[in-house]
Image (cartoon, rainbow, N blue to C red; front, top):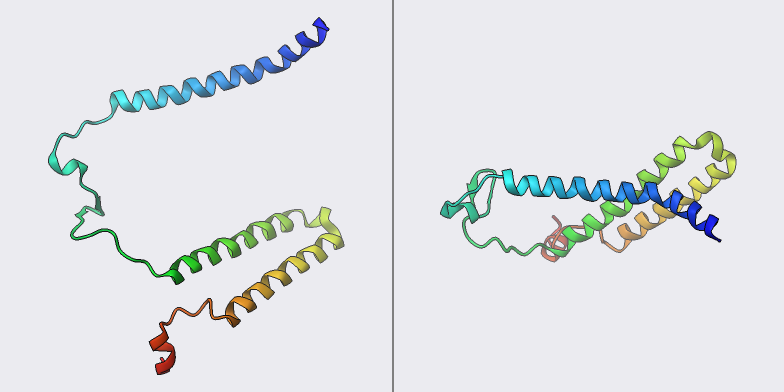
Length: 134
């Protein structure tokens, strides 16, 4: 019983050393940034700005729902490219079964795109623009 505990401790020792090194490096970087970082005491130091321009007016603006929908669609269809890239790298090992699986995957994505197009999820025009023929 004691021999298995010694083997377990021998296997865990590198993990414990690695965890300690990661904690020490992270703590050193955060502590060094805190100690060596610049200190700003100017009034404008706490003001948000973008591209060197101080914000004017209310920064809380309303963003339309189609913007979020487009962002979600982008993430979903961007993942398609990640999976297809991984498939293309392993094309030799995947063989014909992998090719058929990739075809099914692409078919499902095309069906989803057709559905989104059919329900109008990709149409950004307002209701007024749709009915005025723009």
